[in-house]
Length: 422
Ligand code: AMP
Image 1: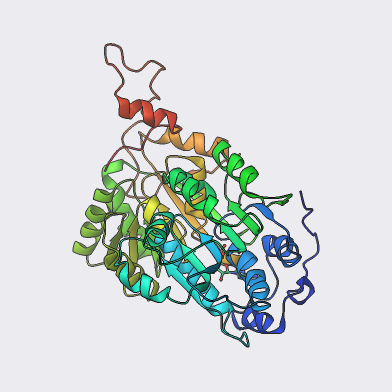
Image 2: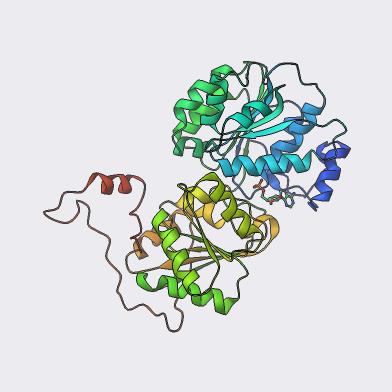
């Protein structure tokens, strides 16, 4: 495991080239984050990296900057070859990484061709764009395989592989796709793996893919966001939308990302807020790519004040200066809790994460606190004091005379009951 430096270092000291330092300065990054300090020199030396880090830690620049530098030193061979593959679980993450790479590469003397490909949109433009290959290909697994099957791209000369959010690649069921993609890369290559968590599937993947990697462990809550204020507000479940509205109005939040449990809830709550005169949009996995992009663009541009999202849809979103995140429904797992609150207080800015706790979810929230070794004071807001009393956690074995459904067993296996629907 590499030791994390205690003193902040400068980007210059990490060995980055002048055009990349210029791009970093243009982004107003004054000092590298912990993950950047730990990974950039290793990657520049040609080493493999096994890093535990999550969105918000600055991990994109941690791999993108050295990758650009290494690729700049070589040339793209003819043919439909990708020189570097960055494999990610979601289209949003792919688009964000593509955008970051474009910005970091701005001042390179010789332009590098980077492409982003994902499913849910027409494959033809992607096939066309891949003519002549690419220096960097950012891809989701399913679409990448489609493109390979169409002979639109070959990985046979890819000398760099980045697996980003590796745990989510498995969560989203991409194990089989990974099994097909990885053997298509040459054995001799540099590989980097980033993951927020290391369940056994990710450990095995890391062992199979990486060669003598440097292990880098960045603490669970990214060091770049020390200032997340976490709050827990008790409220009766049916009054959550009203409370949300009240908070938005009285606290004058310019924008707020609200997590709910289901696709239905994103639409339902957004609808209620709109009827109350607020601008709100829903973001969930069943929207078309166009609708997702539009909802996100409206939110980023400030045209929409409230974005209601499910975990899946919000995964990997990078929205600058998000002041508030609300857990309208609690996340199912402690890991999802970390991912959600990581949407606020990005890279050094302060943020607030608010949890709505109702009679049915007290026990579940205590579990989340326990996993994170947190104790968050319970608050009540005047006019919204709950009247319902805490529902005791069901005794093991369930209610007498009732067999547990398959769904219930799955939920339990997922770690703590699903918060109830609205
Ligand atoms: P990431 O973890 O890659 O999603 O990055 C999270 C956010 O931090 C992005 O908005 C980056 O632009 C920003 N960021 C990355 N590196 C730095 C840095 N060294 N200083 C300040 N902000 C940074």
